[in-house]
Image (cartoon, rainbow, N blue to C red; front, side):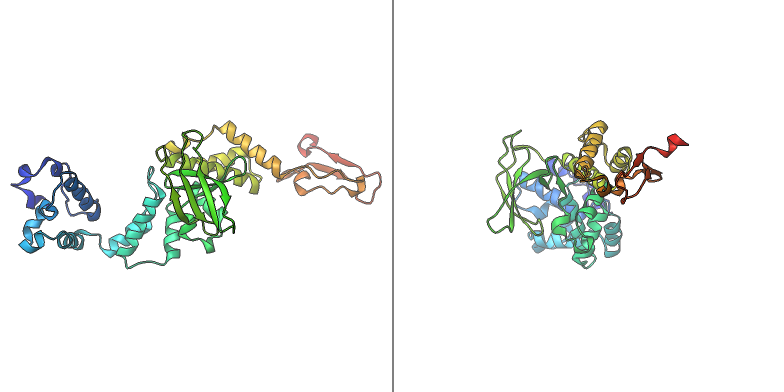
Length: 333
């Protein structure tokens, strides 16, 4: 492309000079470069778009006045070949500030260049390209054999008040209600009180696929805030499902998280409190027994840790004057 523009680069309009020359490599997709040139031409009210491409000089006069002809020729010449598209498809990861929907769209474009892939394969590639924290919440929140892009592209989490939350295009929504037959979920922007935002969302109850968007947000999208909420949900979920130390849960949740996301998250002390509250809600004390003999303790009340017993002695369930001794084996050694 550089050879074609020698001698005429000084005559190009200023807007076109702002668009970098396409060098024919795979560092920038030809489709993205064409979109930039087209946008510049629209802003300058250009009506002869094909004449804006220096390589249009190689085409016949008839082709120069047809945008589609030049566009198809450029795509056929410079688009990524199937082998390169496949390598990029399997190596593609979600960018630091990239919206998941944009990431998914790029995967679809690469899949089309290699002849198409099954929806299941596309879903697996999408999940594999997400940060570790998002992968964990998706794998824990849905059965992977039933995973579809309709519900995997939008992470799901629970608020501190146990209300379902939903993210879409960098915004977070809170569940408001269901329709009369329970097939549609109604969502409100979770910043409706902070910014008086009237944006709403309708999704299908079974798949969480977006059905309808109502109103425009009053605030900008914040993908980092959305991912921070998902990481916090991951922490709470692991607190429910494991007996790991809170520090271990927090460290594993944030180890693959970007600095921008960590800046949006609560402090470590606040995360520890959330873990303790969640475990306290689930591991409530047993009901009051009728007698000593009827006491049945869950395993979590018998062990102090994975390798140390808390119940040191039990005279037996058939003893009316049943005696139990609790303590730490380490202190008696």
